Image 1 (cartoon, each protein chain N blue to C red):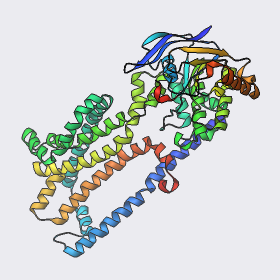
Image 2 (image 1 turned 180 degrees about the vertical axis):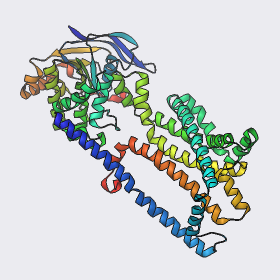
Image 3 (image 1 turned 135 degrees about the horizontal axis):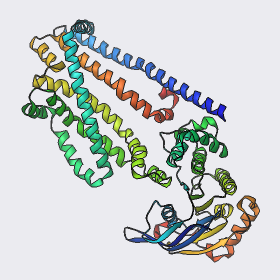
Image 4 (image 1 turned 90 degrees about the vertical axis):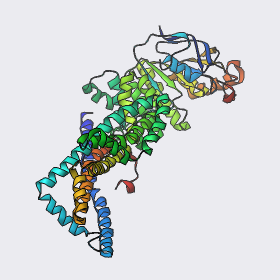
Length: 278
Length: 249
């Protein structure tokens, strides 16, 4: 039996190593997609000229220049800090409120129209209001991120709880799990199906809204640098900052959200047919 | 000794009565099969007996130390492997991690689950394997009472028979008591020491019949003859199979 356990443990380790390698290997598909985008970009550059659209290589050269400038690093880190802290804030509150609403159909019925109202208000309106309330500060950017991404995270968490498999709740109760244990081990675990796509969307929104809020509120960061590039009509620098903002988003998503999702959703991967897995 | 006693159990959903005046005892080491047509409230009764639903009337006396339950659906957590599912209930039973690690392969052996199958997720297992995991999960916590809520209804005939054999064997060896819900009289006659019949509309237990011998030593021919005889001549079983469930609770 001990030998069998050792074999089982070794198989588990091999499985984990295999999944990490597979995650790294899957980057090739992403790289291929980015190359396709670069080809379309290059075609646009050749059709309209460098004044309208600088080439991907010229943009890369500009990114290289910015990489050597400590001030540019500070701007990028400021935007990263604002977007990630705003995302953390909206994740914490959105999950908390969504889970509570998921367990309470009456709250869900009241919250649904409010979510529609929140979704209907354009982010620009919140930026104006936040500028009046907080000026050009971090709080402005975080507030706008929170309001823009809250409906998505809230609905993701609430739907996950509301559509959970109640049979699993019954099973856990039959084997002696109390309400708190059932919530932590069964209820919360089932929100991941709808919560992770919502979090990926919220993260994208956080970066987009952070740059937009910085640009309009003159709050520095990548948005502020984009505003400067617009004033100087520096297309290469504007595109370089856009690429940097997208790069930051990709780094956070693939170093934080996707690995956690991959670890939690291992069973979904196991269910996929071979051709989809690889 | 009584392992479980139900006294005057009654229940209603949205003001509509589904169970009324149910009295039933299960002795220690005894398996009682509860039969009745679909929709007569058998599942509600077993959920009340297991403490998953509060009865509107009556009381439940439990003389056992620890119970387990096997459901009609496997009710396996899809995100956990077969081993993880068994380990989960061991954790709920307060068994230390070190003991759990040795207990999981032990019960897997009892239900003929391979070590490789223990590493698989429910989605990778066949219907029969999933049901084996649920049986292993139930027996892993070493219960002295098991509630069976029509556990093999969704399985094909051959597989159902294998699962029944598994349950008969483990229950007899471990001297486990149980309440087995089924609408299949043949299954009841194979597994149980005693069969109780629920009224079509859940208004009490119509009657009981005690089977001779131990389920493990009961021959197939004996079971077949008993069922044929019961269905043909015993008025208690006349309405077990012939009810339109839309008209019942």
